[in-house]
Amino acid sequence: MAQEAEDDEERFRARFTRIDTNANSIMTRGEYTIYRVSTSNGMDSNIDGALSLPEFRDQERKPSQRRVARRMKSFERIDQNGSGGVEREEWDGYADRRFVRLDKDENGEVSFAEFVAYVK
Image (cartoon, rainbow, N blue to C red; front, side, top):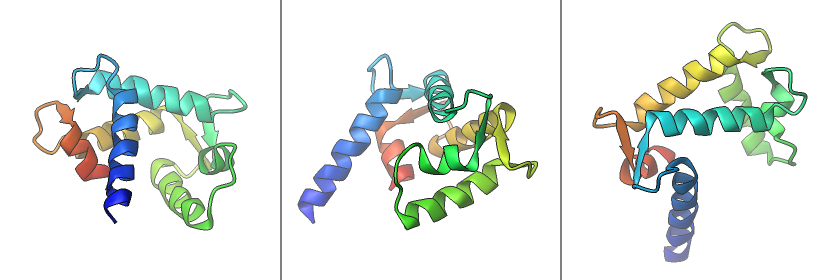
């Protein structure tokens, strides 16, 4: 169990570090926006400016059934207009809502502790 906690900490730290581009141990809204845009662009394999369910769900990997189910629910939540694709405005709105949930103390920044509390 202790090893699992250490592995989680390592994964969370690596992800947080990718987002915290200036390495000051604080995630700003700007850094998070850049991360989310990069993530969206990376998933948009046909470069049409929108994410289809297969692009969002699979991300060119063989996901587990559990991950597929979670991603499908997330996709449906993000696809606010029900078009079957996630347009840029929907993705940006999702990212903004998520940042607000990450920022528990509402100071406009996300600490590593806030990040871990959210992703666990």
